[in-house]
Length: 219
Picture: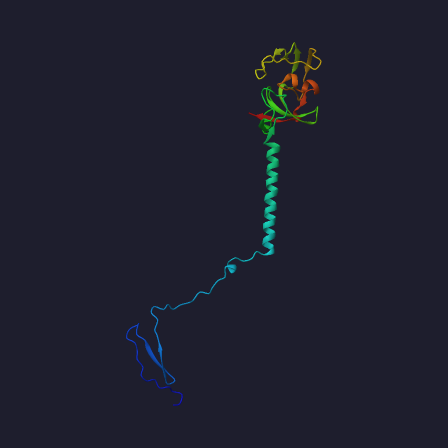
């Protein structure tokens, strides 16, 4: 048979380290036998770029929409917190000396008057009718009470008002220094600054309404 190859001088190794002789088309060749050569599947090389899929246009739109929603919620939360709960305030001027100093920072508690009404002695922030801005004052009289300014003192419903927060020797006068009886109406509060000689308050622009009281200073 012409296609049958005759193999002669074949030496089979008895040890893995021995070489093996083969005859191929009348020629001998030495094929070394490798020790402990693993047999299995060779993993293909993976490019680092192929590990992370590129984001699609739809994913980018979703991420952008999520960021916009988070920003909107943050702004809304800050607005609601500062509008109805608490916000920081800076005292400007000396109308509340010696209780408050110019430049002092405090927390304005807006939530306190949702639970109860303003009380006498509270230091509050009011919408100042005199200048259409905000001012820090102290509540002296409540709705339906009478005030009498007499010889530098303040009488509420005929009784002297004790004011330990004032500087020693402080006297309270109306702008014209006259003795006058004033009555607050329903939903009206009479407010004064602690620095009576340097404060524009209800003695000048009258009692303020409850809606004009923004909140109480937390100290």
